[in-house]
Structure formats: C-alpha cells, structure tokens
Image 1 (cartoon, rainbow, N blue to C red):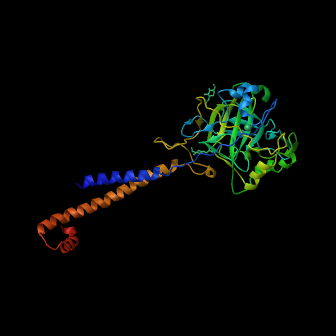
Image 2 (cartoon, protein in one colour):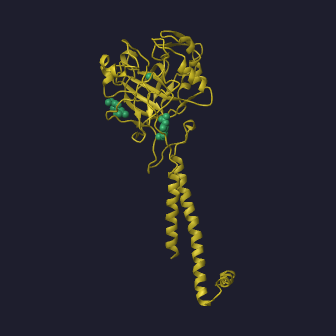
Image 3 (cartoon, protein in one colour):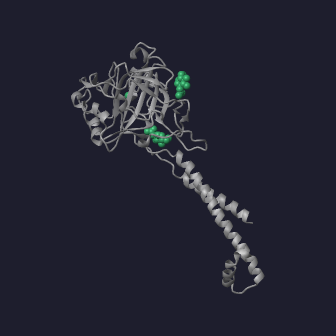
Length: 377
Ligand SMILES: *[C@@H]1O[C@H](CO)[C@@H](O)[C@H](O)[C@H]1NC(C)=O
Ligand SMILES: *[C@@H]1O[C@H](CO)[C@@H](O)[C@H](O)[C@H]1NC(C)=O
Ligand SMILES: [Zn+2]
C-alpha cells in the first residue's frame, strides 16, 4: 500500500518538476521587415536598394538559388559538432598602420591589410580584404540576416578570400572563394571603443567617394568574443554581382554599441543622391532547400547538452543548463515528498489498527495516547 503511494507521489512530483523546468524556454519574437536600401560593392554599374527586384537583370547571379542574406530559423538549423571555433590571426594592428575608410555610396567600407586571416574554423585559409556595415534608420532596424524573423539594428561583414587564389577579384567567382564573418549590432548601455575607432571618422566621409585614413586598432574587437557559437551556410555576396561563392559565418553573440554610437552610424553618411544613406540592407532570400548548420545546440532536445562552459553572457543565457538542474530538483522534491507521505501512511496505518483494537469513541484522545506510546507499539 505505502509502496504504491510512494511510486505515485514520486511520478507526480517528477512530472511537476519537469514541467516547471521546461517552461523556462527562451523566446525571440518576430521582427518587422522594412523597405530595402544599399550596401558594399566591388561594383560596376548602377544599383540601389530601391530596385533590389531588378538586380537580376544586370547581374544574373542575384536571381540565383543560393542567395544571401537569409532568415535563420533556429528550429530548423542542424547542429554540427564538427564546426570548430573561428580562429583569427593578425587582427590586432598598430596605430601606425593606417587603414582606408571610405563611403562608396552603399556603405562605410574599411580596407584591411593582408595580415588578417582566418586560420581555423574553415577547412582552408582565408585572408581578410575589407569590412563594412549594414544598418537601418531611426524608424527601424537594418541587419541583413534575421534570426527567427527578427531583424537586428545593424550588421557587420568582414570579407575574406581563399588564400589559394591570387586576390579577392579572382577568388570571388569560385565556389570556395569567399568567407564572410557576420555579426549583429545592438544598442547596449556602454560606448564600444572598437566601433568608436570607425564611427569617429564617419563625419569625414559623409559624401560618396570620400575617404579617410584611420589608425590601426584591434579589428577583432569589432567581432564577438565568442567565436565558437555561430551559424554556417552557403550563400552569396548581398550586393551585385551577388556571386554565389560565400561560405557564411553568422555569429550568435551580438555586439553592443551605445545609443549615441548607433545613431551616428545611421545618420552620418549620404548616398550618391546626397540623401541619407540608410536602410542599406537586402531582404532575406529564399533558402531553396539549403541547410543552415549551427555550431551549437539551438533548441531544447532530449539529447545530451554537450556545450562546454559559456562565455556568451552578453546575448543572454541559453536554456540548456537549467534543464538538468530542473530534473535534479524534481527528483529531489519527489523523494522528499515520498518519504513524508510514507511516514504519514505508516503512522495512519498503525493508529488505525490500534483504534480498531481499542474500539474507542473519542478519537482525538486515542490518537494522542497512541502517539506518545508509538515506539512501543
Ligand atoms: C556548401 O557547399 C559545399 C560544396 O558544395 C558542400 O560540401 C557543403 O556541405 C555545403 N555546406 C552546407 C552547410 O550546406
Ligand atoms: C542565439 O542562439 C539562441 C539559441 O538558439 C537563439 O535563441 C538566439 O536568437 C540566437 N541569437 C543570435 C543573434 O543568433
Ligand atoms: Zn555586406
């Protein structure tokens, strides 16, 4: 009898505990799509973000089926334990090394020296050539990639080419030619000193075609500290000619800029029509059956959580670790409850048989008496 009760109470409480633990799921809700705009270019020809539908006319690849950016649906990404942390080398530059920052009418573009390279995370070696940004306007965010439909304030792209090719121009037409590292920018509480190295020069390149020399700094500071959690897929350049030669890495950790820095990014530049250079992002393109890999586990599953310790506190915690804690708690409470229930049942059982023997009329008294003599019964 009491064993059955124990089993029932254990099961009940374990189930309750599990339900409680499971309910702390993370949720990122959908964002809003905005009108298009512009971006980086190695480009010839004229294109704008107002006619993204027409890009395919002059640049056939833009109408291809491996285009970027995309929406990354974290419920559909495939966890791949083979995706190693991205490793950067030569990213820290002395102030004496000057870098060209320019307004090309589509974005602010910082040219990078050949010393910067990706030395692990990809099967081959890639060398950096330039970085640039995509952003929105005061009325809406402007990242190119979206996560579960959510658009972030802005996005940085660091463009690399495969060292087996002579240069970027040559590499960009080969399927394994390019790698772009992408990260999202959001508004946070503090000024970001790395982004400030670029932002403080935007006033000098307000007009299309203007350029300025910027002292070198640690370019890696523009990318997340956590280079091991990212999404990976095969895609394209997000501006004409949209070559489908980019192996994309989109980091899970986001970068934080102060509100003032973000507004400087949105407000500083003008395009070739001398209008504010804003909303320079392309909308998400169809996946056409492509797979998006994740270097980490994005959803709660019944499988093991193999992640090592986290250093991505800035993006908010992942729910994985609380799952196990919840299970342990559930079992603990179940056992405690069962012991209590068992003791109570034993107690009842003993007194019921005693009561029967005593055949008493005053139950309270009998119980009291019995309790004091329990040990001897
Ligand atoms: C990208 O393309 C290469 C070459 O076709 C292929 O081997 C690789 O599996 C693809 N990657 C993904 C994530 O689909
Ligand atoms: C990071 O990964 C978590 C877990 O899948 C996801 O909820 C979140 O939206 C991701 N954020 C970014 C910026 O990738
Ligand atoms: Zn870009």
